Image 1 (cartoon, rainbow over the protein chains, first blue to last red):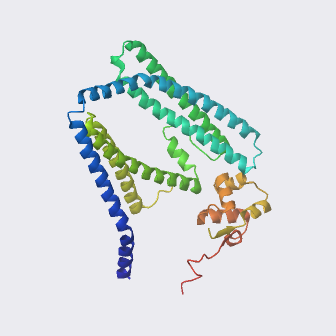
Image 2: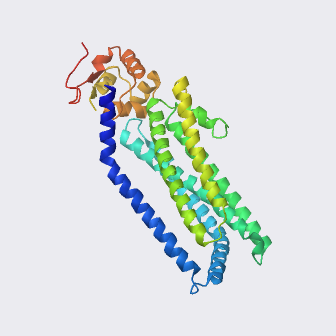
Image 3: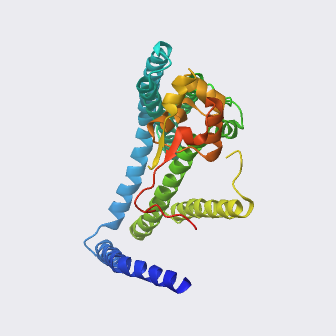
Length: 269
Length: 76
């Protein structure tokens, strides 16, 4: 029986081995060519490295200048879209007859889009705030720039939080079994405890999909940063940051899997 | 999915809507809807709870039909 199983495993591996080899080979070839020719270009006499690096530094500076404007646009769009979406769905829920599954699903779907956009705005605002701070001291009107940046960021964060809370409370009205206050530190735990088996399965499937996507993104980022680091002075911090995130992602998953395998699935999750 | 169910019929028999049945068995309205559509197979615990609320056996609500991979084999 064990020998049969071993044979079946070897046969399965055999089927996929060639395509795996081809992928590795192509990856090596492409990476090698980029490194070889890129290095050749950047180290040749024809390439003006000083002007290139100066252009790269100016590009970062410009991004910092525009970051505030971009953050403000994002915040305003989110506030308008989020508010309209919430009010429209609140009205629809108030008019819902309590039976129509199609109408309920439409409201749920629409609210999910709204919350997705709000979450995206919150994350991007933080990133743009960091970028704006990068050039803070270098502008002609540093103090004004700093005030505008901080006010935009605080207003943006506040509006996102208010929208998230409103949508969650509406979801709790739509689904009376849902527990947990938005302001509670244990909100995630209480919300999860109030989810039934099908909802938890959905959450687990989404989480597993995210896990796969982040793994792919991290491996791609490491390769990209390695290549970019050959030509530009980006330092080692970006590579270390991505490496830490990748490592924690995998270790936390594996440790949790070990724990669940040893002690069984948690009843409340 | 090889699991078929008569949940909608049973629910109509006891005169409750999806939200009410969900409250009685500790599931959400959406889950009851998914089960009725055949898009989700409940756990044994949930199936037993539903059967108890409906006042029937589990087999009267849920029927499992063999798919081709089993070929109707049983352990003897």
